[in-house]
Length: 126
Image 1 (cartoon, rainbow, N blue to C red):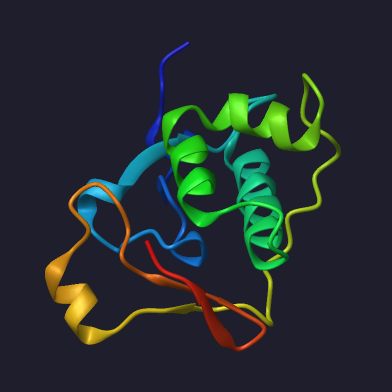
Image 2 (cartoon, rainbow, N blue to C red):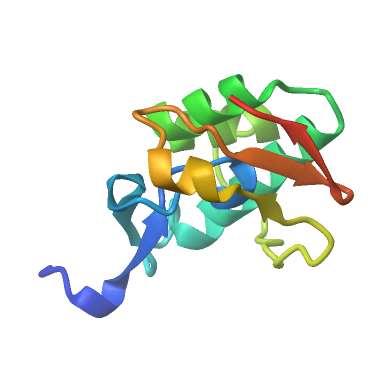
């Protein structure tokens, strides 16, 4: 089977709401139409990690490391399953990332300096 551009989306390795930058080094082609481990499943993981960081169940650096290193292993760890659960990915409307102009100029050099906003206030910075 040949890969086609429409089978992928360009997505963040570390999503902005987990402190990821909008830098090209934080983008990668993500399988959109794969049957099991696809972009929709990773979106659910991103939301789970964001909720865990905001509730204090997980520190931001660990969330970033786990999703950037092996997002499928992270999914299995945080959802406690070996296969994706039925998709629930819905865009969160009450959470946003907060990024200062200076942080955008500096970039992250492998780790994020962005703040993660939980309930309207900056929760953590790396």
